[in-house]
Length: 455
Image (cartoon, rainbow, N blue to C red; front, top):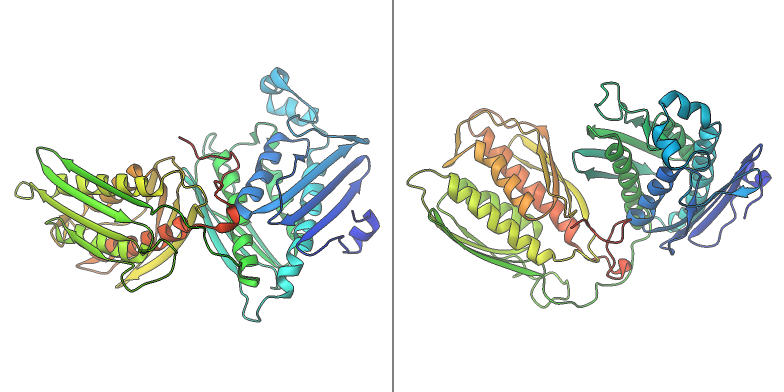
């Protein structure tokens, strides 16, 4: 480990792909170790929710991280708070919590400093091989209703931007505590981490009403952006192991519709190689805009898709659009299976005409859909515009995904709804492709701090 003096001088003990640092203040000492693509290590900061957040860096950044905090020479334990436990913690008022926790601010500061320095050491080897064109990496991470954005560029001039407050909407000013984690110190931790890590770092809330989700999504977004930055600096090697084809199919017959869906996520042959016949799409539903939405989504996701529907379009388009979206979502869920080894999260933007839309996708097994699309027309290309959101929501829910749609630029005049719908389908497909890619470095494990996705 690096000495405190070495840490103050900006020197961090490390071997290739690893870094470690020790910082001290009075009776409190924090030791951090980071190994790029390393094994999971215990984390004990004295604040259990903070340990849980570091776990997000491990799972989503593919980093081995160990943080050990000691107070008065006594090491903290991973599942034990340094000041309060059990019923006493749950019964305490905010004022009593603040009084009973004299070391919170110091803990956040030292954990941020030590972790930032150790991350810098772990990144040094990848950065030494980076091309001159290496730029910033950006990632948006969702967690149910929350979405946060992270930007990382370790070779840029020092720049820090942070905007997560308020932490939720109940109470109106946001939450002060998440368990025994004081939300106001979140900014302080990231400031200190950035000070030791260097470069450009931006952490911004795009939406969110739940404090827990806002903070956790931020740690995930940073981890994913950092991982993307390191991979861009030194691209990973290896190919996905051979596996059974990821395919799904559904037949659905009701009084209103008769539907057949078949899809495949991987190219023929199962080796991941690109081929001209990798993406064959045929969609015939009797609703023109629905055909276009599904065809664009499948094409940009690089998956094969065949959809046919004989529906009661002589009544209206509702049953056909809804039932087809359900069947496609269920087929997608079948093809994704357990999601083991998948990259899991992705975000992308796409355009059509004047419309530009960003879509964030998480193969979470926790169905959730949110959108801010401004759909002002009644009809578009044979489909009611209100059904555009219903199609994407039905597909998302049945695919067991979390999806956020963010309008970056609206369409213009007549046809604006169709432009937004097609831009959304393209962005959704691009993001879905990122999610579905198998990362061989995960060795078939699930990208989750829990070790599995919620059922």
